[in-house]
Image 1 (cartoon, rainbow, N blue to C red):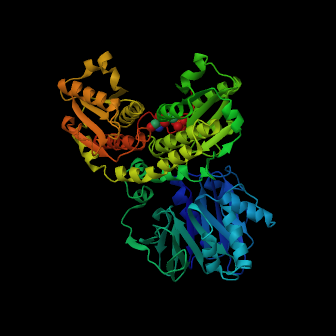
Image 2: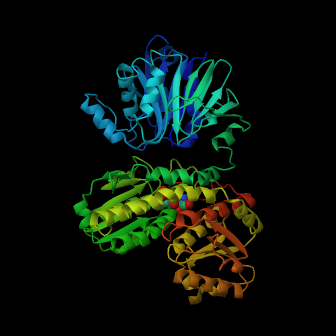
Image 3: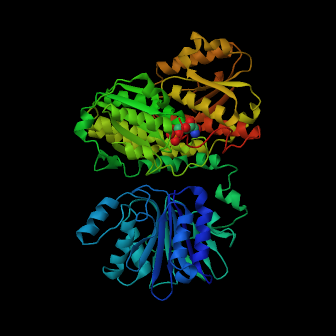
Length: 619
Ligand code: AGP
């Protein structure tokens, strides 16, 4: 996610804003910028791609504090969603006397952009955010709110759809900032004769510990001596005042002990944001589709390539893609792909899944696929990284920066995006009617609420983890999409707790692994949905009976209503009901929490496990 900061007060705004941006760096970003109002009707903007140092260098070159005089300012660290990371796509975005910064996704930016361009407005960036600046200028200059800065901001907000935090400033109104939030975070810092804005409290914690959390669809009008909160219609409302009792490091982690725990909690938003704007006019839309529907119809095989957790998300996708499109779908470890001389041609669609977009094994596999004339679609979390740049089409996940080395929110966002790829293929090929595609998309849209329920009920899982923290090995079983879920559960435990763990298809037990079962060996089993209690359910019940008979400790993840499996569970972890294909979005979360808690119980660094890097840029 982007980082947003704002300041109105008595101090020189530039150093306050730049220092606040430095406090936002941990969130990950690819460009940064500031806008300072000089109080005499001018606004000075400086923005640069790359690290904050690039921006600071440019500021010094442009006169430093002497060149950016004023006690009101806004700042931004950008995590690119629409438009590559470069100077012109960096924030703040400017329109006349208006400067704005934005975090989130304006879903309806395309029609708004078209409206502005047809009115002769020249947009200089590729971003969705810029439309908000021009809409505000036009609202102030004409229309029912002409001349009224605050009312014009509200009029603009009424036209936006999606998830966004926006801060509006105007050179002719240097004593006030207007900010608004919908589904993305924003907090106020209340100082003595000065006020602060931040995407989180890390932005201003060194100035004040008195904060106000803004609620959904809140607008705040902020001046040095105070603030008022309303809804988007201007009706007065209240934010939630609170006293920050965290230190700075804890503030960056949102009060969690580790970034990974914060990122587990961010998963509902990561899935919701990945879905934003992907279903328009009754159709699935990809971010950058340089493959025509006709070319998608000509596809006769799908190959998914990825590493680690991304690979597991591809294994989950295989079940959906084959079921929805009737196309054969192979999933291959990227580092194996090009050495096996895969059968590829122009009718092969290669889906490359990568959070970082820089994983060398996956990048080299992409290059091999392209050398064989296959078409490549990238599913990636990092705008402007190498893999999407070399792909023919891109679908971005919107998990935001993932600081913890172990993949959590990026993994759930990858599963979500992979389903969108499957639906886009089924839509192009006509193997699903439009209403069926819509129904599947609506089911996905309901998942963040169920994910939130799982995220809110993880304490029992942590208790189990603390009880089993000294185990020597743990096994993970599943069938169908429960099998890749088992692999992901094992990977989390290996990479975080340095514990031996193995995931495998439950049906494989009798072909060897059952010899591993001994007294008290912890074995996780994820059960398919109760609805329709298919053959998978009964076979897994048999598998649980087999391992219990041999002394295993069964830890079962299943729907709360699954009365058949409860008596067989030494530990029962309930999850909300879902469909078979969507269940990995729920069943994976206890595995993430379990592994993190075992690692913490063992005294390991949950965010930075030994020997591991967040992005493996060597083969
Ligand atoms: C998973 O927890 C790991 N961080 C690792 O397996 C990761 O998923 C893999 O290295 C792929 O990274 P990528 O998605 O950035 O390509």
